[in-house]
Structures are given as structure tokens and as C-alpha cells.
Amino acid sequence: MAIWVCLGDEHVRSVSRSVSAVESRARRVFRVGLTGGIASGKSTAAKYFAALGVPIIDTDQVAREVVEPGQPPLEQLVERFGRTILTPDGHLDRPKLREIVFSDPRARADLEALTHPAIGSAVEAWSAAAGGPYQILVVPLLVEKGITSQVDRVLVVDCDEELQIRRLQARDGSTVEQARAILNAQTSRAARLKAAHDVIQNEGDLSAVRDQVSALHTRYMELAGRSSSGT
Image 1 (tube, rainbow, N blue to C red):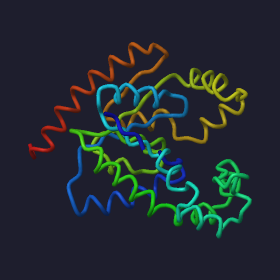
Image 2: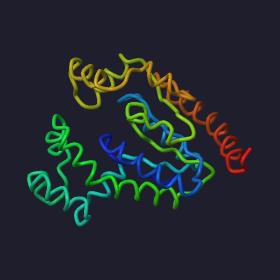
Image 3: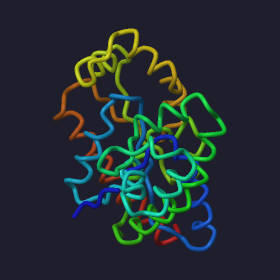
Image 4: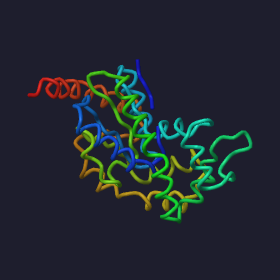
């Protein structure tokens, strides 16, 4: 059974701190950090791993869950940023909050400080519950935030940048200019590939992606077995 967990990109550094603390206390399950540029196909690759029974810890979903109505982090965010960050039904208005913190480093730091303890704890709780020989930790900004050391293996989903732009246009209705701006705000394709131990090429052939995932699954099962035995 696959277990999914998620967290906005802005919280990745916060999770890494909590993960580091836990790692210093106990050996954790073998983890593969799955990353890639926007619209590269990370979710597609993760779903294929999940179909093989691999636990998926999706850092974006974690962030959503810890700020659900009634959760302490949401109350703290409202105290800091005001009730304008809430939707009429009391949920977090994520676009509104992003608008506030996007160009304000202090606000972004406050956001991370208010949410990272709960996020880090949630990631570790889900990870402990998920078990498995190995886990896939989906972290979009794994390379950008310099936290590749928090996983045992870095897996990059890669595709041509022009294909990313076309996917963004189709998925989000972005203009070419908007799509290029999004890509330019991320780390370069070359930097991601340099950090990768493994790469999945996703040029649109889903059967090819599935085959690559299957081969990597065999490899990760082997590596996880070696890790657990200490060899």
C-alpha cells in the first residue's frame, strides 16, 4: 500500500532541520529524494513507484495537512499575518499567503518558523508509519535548498525545457513568458542533473517512464537491503 504525504516548496528547508535531528537519534529507512523542475513529471514518476508498493512521502501534502482548520500552525499563522489569509470557510488561502511572503524575506522566515516543527514531525510520523524497504521523498526544491544530504539517493525527473513550457501552458494556462520566468526562478537543469545519482527521462512516453521506474525499483531494493544490513 502506498502512503502519500505534501509541503509547499517554501517549507523544504524547515523539514530538513527536523529530519537532521531525527537522523542523529536513530537510523531511518533508506530514502530516495525525488525532484525535478516544474512540469517535469515528478508526480507521474511517484505514482509509478506507488503502484509498486513503495511508500511516497510527498512534502507538499504534508504542508497542507498541518495547516488544516483547527491545527495550531494555522492559528499561529492567522495571529502573525491576519485573517485575510483565510478563505470564507476558514481554510488557508495559500495564494494569498504566497503573495504576502513572496517578496518579503522576514515574512517568509516567520512562515517557516511557525510551521516547520509541525511539518518535520508530520514527515517523520508518516515515514515511521509507512515503513517499507525504502521510501520516495518528493521534494521539488531538494537541490535548490542544498538538502540533498538528507536523502540516501537523489533521483531527478528530467525533460527538455521547451516541453516543460508547453506543459505549463497546457496545465496552468501560462503564457510562454510566464512559463520561462518560472523556469528561470528555479535552479538550472544542469545543476539538478549534476546532483543526481539517477535520472528518469520523461519526454512524454509514459510507458518509457514506467519502465525506468521499474528498473530503478529493482536497484533501490538492492541498495536498501545493503543499507539495512550495513554492507
